[in-house]
Image 1: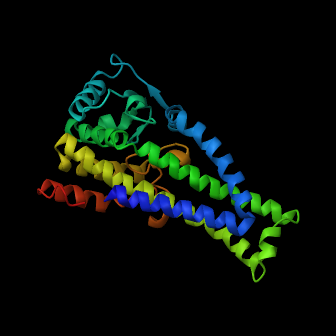
Image 2 (image 1 turned 180 degrees about the vertical axis):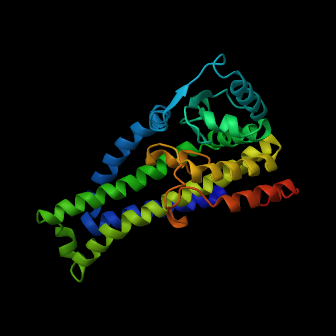
Image 3 (image 1 turned 30 degrees about the horizontal axis):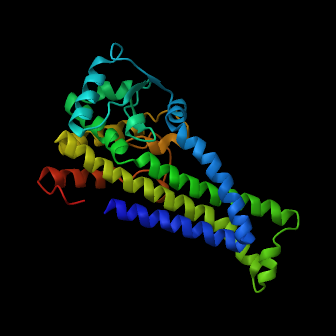
Amino acid sequence: MNGLKTALLLGALTALLMLFGRVLGGNAGMMIGFVFAVVMNFGSYWFSDRIAMKMAGAREVTPAEAPELHRMVAEIAQKSGMPMPRVAVIESDAPNAFATGRNPKNGLVAATRGIMQVLDRRELRAVMAHEMGHIKNRDILIGSVAATIAGAISMLAQMAQWSMIFGGGRHSDDEGGGGLISALAMMILAPIAAMIIQLAITRSREFGADHTGAEVSGDPEALATALQKIEAYAKRIPMNVNPSAAHLFIVNPLSGASIRKLFSTHPPTEERVARLRAMSRGDLAGR
C-alpha cells in the first residue's frame, strides 16, 4: 500500500510540475527548469551519502571503534540478505539515527552517541533494523526523485518571478483571461503544494521502514518503545543539524521547534507506535 501511495504522490508532483510549466512559460519553460533541477539533484543523489554525513555531522567508524554497533548491523544485514552497510557515529547526546546511500550496495547507517546510551540492546537493534529497512526499500532513491521534481517546481517559481520583473510572462498574457493572476497564484501555491507532497512521501516511507524493521528484528514492541524514548529526548535536546537533513532521521531531530503536523517530515510518533503494537498483537499485515 505504501508503494502505491508513493507512486500516486510522485505522479501528483509530476502533474503539478507540468501544470506549473504550462501556466508560467509553456513547454520550453518547463523543460529548462526541469533539466536544470535534474542535473543538480542527480549530483545530490549520486553523492547522497557524503552530503548526508556532512549535514548530520556523522563520521564513519571501524569495527574496532564501535564493535557492538558493527556486530549488530552485520547481524541484521545477514538476516535481511543485504550487503553490510558502512557504519557511522554522530557525536551528539540526542538519541537518533539515520540511513543513506543510493542503493543497498552503497548503504550507510549512522547512530548518535546518545542513542547508544539511552536505548537498551533490543531497542537499538530494532532502530538499526528500521534504518536498514530504508536502504532495503530504496527510500533514498524515492526521496531523490521527489526532491528533483519539487526542486524543479521551486526553481521554476523563482525563474517566473524574475521573468515578470523584467517584463516576461508573454505566454501567460497570450492565454488571456486571467493569465497573469494564474501565473501569480501558481508562483505562490505550487512550491507549497510540492513541499506538502514531498513531505507526504517521506512520511509514507517512514511507515514502510517501521514495518520492515519490525519484521526483520522480530521485535515491533522494542521499536515502539525506542521511538517513544527518542521523541521524548528530541523535545528536550534537539540536535544541531542542518534542517535539510531532518527527514533522514528516525525521529525529527528538530522536534523541539514549533513544527506543525502538516509540515512535519515525519508521521506522528503516536500513530507509528500504534501500528507497531498492532504488529506485536499479531496483525503483521495491518498497516
